[in-house]
Image (cartoon, rainbow, N blue to C red; front, side, top):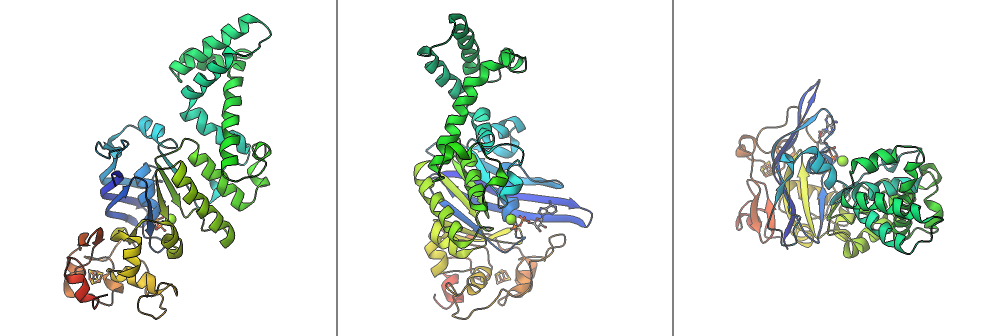
Length: 393
Ligand SMILES: Nc1ncnc2c1ncn2[C@@H]1O[C@H](COP(=O)(O)OP(=O)(O)O)[C@@H](O)[C@H]1O
Ligand code: SF4
Ligand SMILES: [Mg+2]
């Protein structure tokens, strides 16, 4: 599969009063076109910061201080755009259009004083203005208007806006009393599209839902609306950061099912961030395991569950009854370290039952340990070593 997005040696730090939080330590990931990539790990391992760094929306006091984020918009995955070196204007045009993100907490992402319809329509108005103006122009040809001059005037504005969505005259007219009414048909088109996308997400009475406010909707509905907003422009990559974690199991299953269906229809790839291995097993094609700011293992889902190589992955699986590799249910002992002063060498070494002297001295690199299976562990790296260390699993 061609690549869609890739991070190389991504380093993000937070400058806090307690010191520098070294949140991402050379994170390297590849997400292929048409696939769902799961990112798992305990809370505080850097999953959200990785996603935010990819979109360049790291919160204060965070700074991306190294590495590359390569985005491959072409279908062949050949030509890359390095996102960290692009202008903020470029990133704004990319976000919500080619890369979209849905967060865990819908209440924080939705504006309480705007109707659902207006919030979904914003996406279309920001990214699809040109296309919508062209559609209005087409409709105007057959429109029956009260006086002929009005048609000419509207065509004048829509033609200019279709040629350049940031046209100064149109912007000026949009702020001027009476003249600003030229946009009515554009708003109507954005609303029509909003109803259409909300209905496509299996929400009944979409034409009424658009007039409601977030507080009128249930948690599951709000999460669907966020998905609608994220999908408005049919992005190449949808990042879902713990998007179903706050929902009850039935709604969670419905939303995941919806994402699966949508992936087939309108999104190319999904980066699914979750701490739920069951969700990963059911939804993802490939999975990356993160620990304390580093990626420690990446493999196809079946391979990772059958043949986990990194001690941390094995510990995570052992903590879930259905996936336990040792046959015993155990919690992962110890805690994620404070990233102001992370452990030397392999950041997992204070918790690792298999640690050796070298583990505290040298950071293990992510290395190929099998076909499409990468692992960062001094003992599990290399094609032959892994099977011996884990007793040929
Ligand atoms: N705004 C922030 N200020 C300071 N530290 C932060 C901030 N956001 C994240 N971090 C730190 O970055 C690390 C990774 O966090 P995060 O990516 O949110 O973890 P995850 O999503 O895996 O639970 C954590 O150690 C966290 O303390
Ligand atoms: S490198 Fe060493 S400490 Fe780290 S996971 Fe491997 S064995 Fe454990
Ligand atoms: Mg998170």
